[in-house]
Length: 271
Image 1 (cartoon, one colour):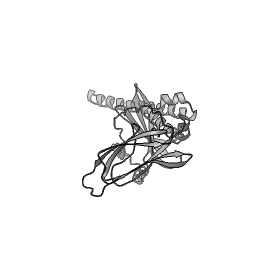
Image 2: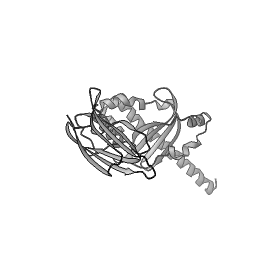
Image 3: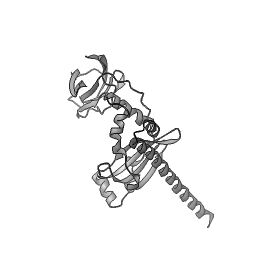
Image 4: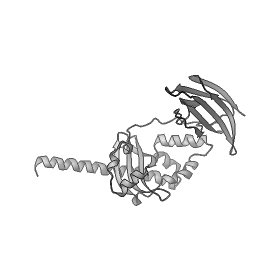
């Protein structure tokens, strides 16, 4: 074999071996996560789940007045599947992020494209989350054995390792946030905690958003940063916060303003 062709062969072989190693490492990481969920093993879950996903889930459940990891073990089985029953399509990494992609059935038995996402921490892959991409276009391509679309940006890991959120000590009440910020971009903090949500001023109301950290008994502080969107004549900002007690909602904060200030800081009380 001539040296030129030998180099090409070795390059292809090394690339194939590297892809196989990545798949093996990712599937092992996923198996560790699945075993932790099946056995309700809290220690193993903390080791198998990436720190970002672990702390995000913990903060959300505790804010909802749900025990952790008990509540996680109740909801996580939808992310547990037998990989041997799925058709492997592709494994790809980008820096500290990686995707392992399959064609198979979700927890409800529906055919779908399944993406397992991973983060690398301290040199080891940890499971992050599961996504399904079961659009009509994707499913039609898979049925036609066309997987070229998997090279697109949508299916490529972004290479960004997000910061692990700080652990939240929740208040006494679970709380829900409603926002309608037509014509504004809106960012909200409650008791110093950034509240997630897409308050992008396009007219869609965001309702029943879980308040991270909940609401304290007594005085609470809400900070609202408002940025007008140029070109939108009709503008209106409406924000409500309600605490949930025995499945009933009780409003503790309300704001409605057509011309809000850029920065609003108010206090409200929950009895």
